Length: 339
Image (cartoon, rainbow, N blue to C red; front, side):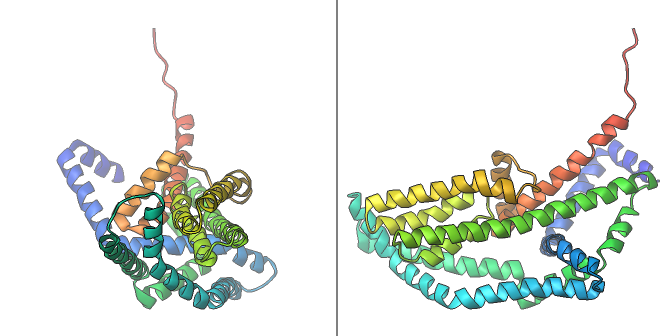
């Protein structure tokens, strides 16, 4: 029956096009729900090894899942409570002083611009970035309710993940169920490795950046380091964006110091690419930089900053699924030319 439907759609190209467009429209309407489900799945993949480890220690499954989630939430809460008050103060001061920094840089390079005209523009842009950040956060989480919903969904997915995987695999033909289950296991492993690796990388890069900026005597070392850690999740583009405000702040002190800061960020990036990434992200499949940039652009255009962030794990998942179908080629009968 299913084969007949596929053949019918193939022969009726207009109907096929309509079917694809309708499906795409439905997916766009449900994009917020799909994003929430994808985030939930990534959380499940990241926390699954902790729950599995606790289960092997004869801890009941429900308790093991609870411990895994409480550990993660407690860690996040401790970090926020210890850093947030000072971080907010620093960010507020940085936003207030940033227009004067830009003015100083303009004077250093001898650019003739009326500061009375450029100051309101810079201030307006900074305020716009602040409002945009709040808007992005609100859109992404959709408020407290959506955040709780994502946590709840991922909790129940983790609790019944073995049954869910088997149920999903059962949707495929009998001969393909084992392969489908294998793909699910591999995707879970890959997404979990990606998130855990990104968290470790973000902390490592943030800590190294803070240490170097503090040694160099750069003001606002903490918010600049936090920015570097957060943008670490966006490959290639993120570190470049993170370096710009640090260089501007350093340039306000002296040109040589700005050069040292620039060199420091390059050194951090080289250390990450050649030392940290091979050790921490060895399970996560590397993607071509061009693919990453295209993915970030498409994801950003579709879902904003959240789309840009989630584009990397999503593309990795697509590549994994695509590669898994190579085995069909080996199984298919080979055709030979008859002379």
